[in-house]
Length: 150
Image 1 (cartoon, rainbow, N blue to C red):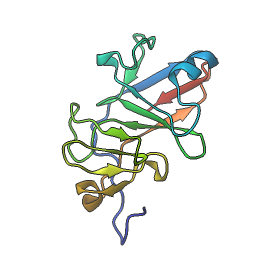
Image 2: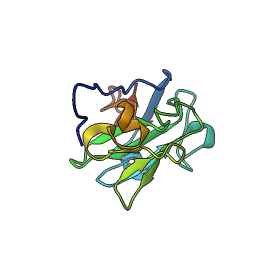
Image 3: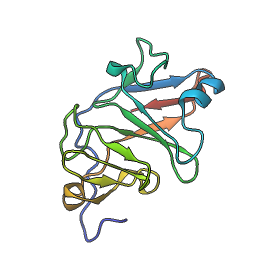
Image 4: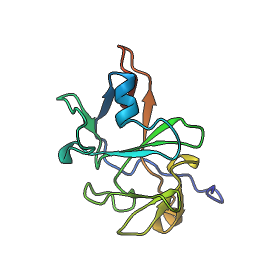
């Protein structure tokens, strides 16, 4: 759903925070990554989520954590887990597998995560044009299979 009128999407409401999640091998990507739609993973270093992921001293997971998804074209996309309306570390969006989107349990805004790059679809986020903070996903330079960086 596109935003109507002349409103511009504000997807920079979350305070800047470093992000670095590396997958050193293809097997690691298959285990902890998002190889195809509609897979998703939450990465929250402080909670050691996902369980068993080999966090290192270099790993950083953004302001409220990272939501890694495979979009409708099976391309990896990453968003900060913090709701841009609430803009707090402890208020995280949740993936709704039945509706194939994500929502905030506090303000009840909903976001398109598999299409339209984290744009709001309902709630205060749509009214105020607040989109999810996006992070860059690319192949690594030194042999990592995939890397998420800010």
